[in-house]
Image (tube, rainbow, N blue to C red; front, side, top):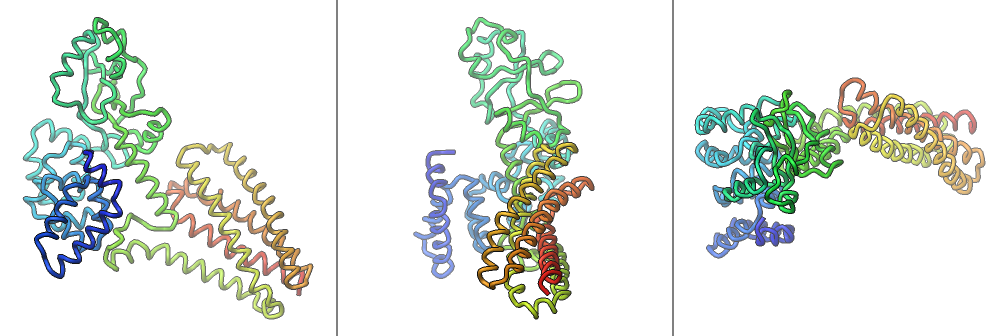
Length: 461
């Protein structure tokens, strides 16, 4: 990132506001000065910041900005924007513009975009690549989206173990620049088998007369193209890696994984989990059409409607009790609301632990006991507090006791479901975060109403 781009990134909200204002003025009275100012603002921004701006604009304004972006930056920006926004940008480009945008990209970057490109562009795109690039793109496409093989970078520096450090230094000076994120050189033998790595700082601080085999680190964190991308991202975080080699089943070096790709994986996994918890099927363009948003949201809203109806019918079972003691109607939302909040806390912790592979069958039982104990303690303490408040407000000791008991039992239900729902989803091969907030809220609402009103009917009527 250049110095100008870095300054632009620091002032991104102001830049977005300025761009929006300029677009509004240009829509009314196109002035050359405004056009020049808008162009200058866009030229100063980093591709990732332009992507942010495009995602924050309605479709007509987005396309107006997109048409003003210099053509040689199109490919980098398409890589940065979300899938939903990328679709709208590509739809605005003709075949010639698409080819010009993607041809300068590396093989791994091309693989990221290929699925979003129009099918009629692909034959000409593949024909424009040389044999090595075509092979690399096909290799990346042969792996699933969540596997390392689809993310690996083929640009790397390899050296032999039987040469001196002086030879390596002379070799490096022949490069105009090293591949991005190069923190180490990969050491291979004559069969292209990975034998170790040579960190650049070791190269610089050791005597040039030493051989690579004397200095290199033979124990290397290696990955295979079929490895799960999120698990590899966790390894990068755990071992503070910047790059790591990717090898085939025979130990031959075939590519590398870089930290910037792993940061993207972690971000996407986090966003996907957040969306799944509330039942959204996919990332959504905030300015998408009404129909597109409806398709993304309707399924779990329908489930939510059913669960809300069930909760209402639970209340309906106790209409007589509510008519006799109106205080029940004012207190029962507290029981359900606190239970839902507690359940969401539990389910968030469990989903995170499952994502990090921190839960085993043995530890699951201990987790259940621990969460139930926490909920029992919270229920007795905070249920006791609200029970005292209910007694003071309505001058009814029995109502206070029922409130305490209902709060405690609903928190225990929330803990049981908060652990059980994601574990059950995991057992059946589903995403443990999928609709978890909807499901836990349904359980604590219906359960809370039933417990509170049931206890009130037994002990107060």
